[in-house]
Image 1: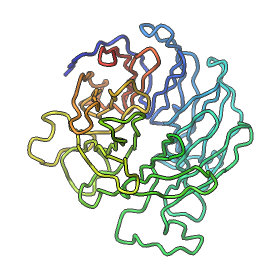
Image 2: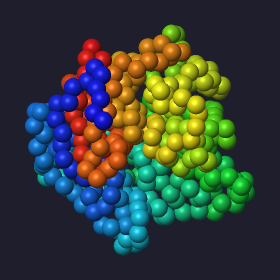
Image 3: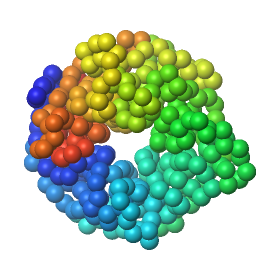
Image 4: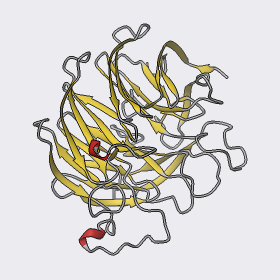
Length: 376
């Protein structure tokens, strides 16, 4: 099954399957999909010889599958997973001092009611999270200030009107999938928020205490895949402001062809317009249903130039160039061998480092460290 184009495998790091991989400097952090594995910290100063530094575990019934690091602070999520675990562990985020990565020290844990926190963004001061919260249906948007990591403070929150049933709002989705914030990503004074089967929203956070909706789009009534990630391109492309919106190939509303990624022109923020889509060539020849986790999952939240690496589940790593946003094109791929006992790859997340290396984590086992000339 191994297939490569414009990519070279540098090394493979053997570890439990991951939900997210992040690299800060020359240290790799892997948030694991299944308990009791929590977070693994790895020295990748020599990418050809990754070296294990530390492991943090979580109890059964909870997972810690997302991780972000900045300014020596590591933030991980805690979310209910599988069979019931010890309630006293609690959902939320855990904050660690990783100034010495081989010796992570828990600073504090921030708790929330319900299932916990799913995915999030962290810029070294603020965490933009997707927690469940008392009185709300589903996950919402919340901003935490970690200027003092030992005392996280909520700055602001946002939700779709109707989610706050505890505040007396009328719930309008009895015949639809409950709303669920997947995760916000910040660029400047905007949050680009994926909201699962409720599409995506652009929020103005120039006043963080009062996030304000600018616009939103939902394709889910027509296309059955949930909205997973909204990635703002940092530069104008063809003179336009561009948002890459990835749908995840899980939780389909009905059997369907694999999910793909959308390209939106958001030059007029009040009216996002889809100008292109991209799918792995040949993956969807006739629109026939295929099994879940065949198609798109997650673009790298860090990338170089106009080439965005994607973790495309069973299709591995795909390198997509959006230099022409009206006609995105693949400039490389890496399809790994399936993990032991798996029928096919399950590429779950991807990131890059400042040196141009790509880190691709499999949902079942391991991280591949990859080089490409596509960034040059």
